[in-house]
Amino acid sequence: MIFTAIGQYVGAKVVTTILVVSGAGAVIWFWRHPEQLETIWETLKYALVWIGIVLVLPWAMFFATAWAVAKESNKAAALILLGYVLLDVIVAFALIGRISGLGALTWLILLLGFLSAGVYNYKVCEYQASRLEEA
Image 1: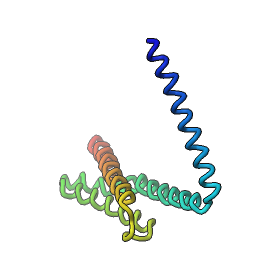
Image 2: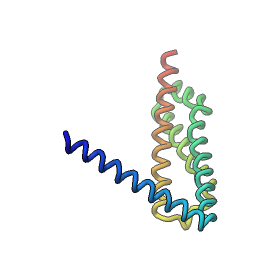
Image 3: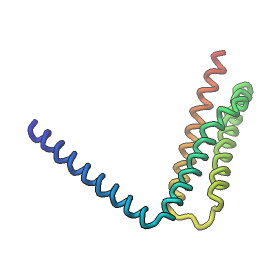
Image 4: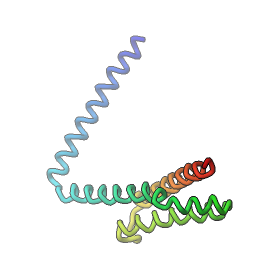
């Protein structure tokens, strides 16, 4: 019990020190390089716009889910999900402005974003379909 308390105390001090030092380092870095701060804000702006579009798209296209439920076809549902992900990809690359010259980390983040968007689209469509079948 005493070792747990000591470990928590020391761990809290270490984490606090790391946060203070890294925060001070970030302030100093961006103070000396303001152009990089502008780049970060631009990237965040585009990411938030893309996330907003991803969140709204399946809800705005609710009639497509109703169409797939009426068809009672897995092919129709798969076509809708594929279309949603394709639109998400097109919007992402339109916001980025290019496909070539992207680094490995950028591609990894994009692929994880597309995967997340696909899962989100699937869950929203599944929810909409369950609501339609209840009615």
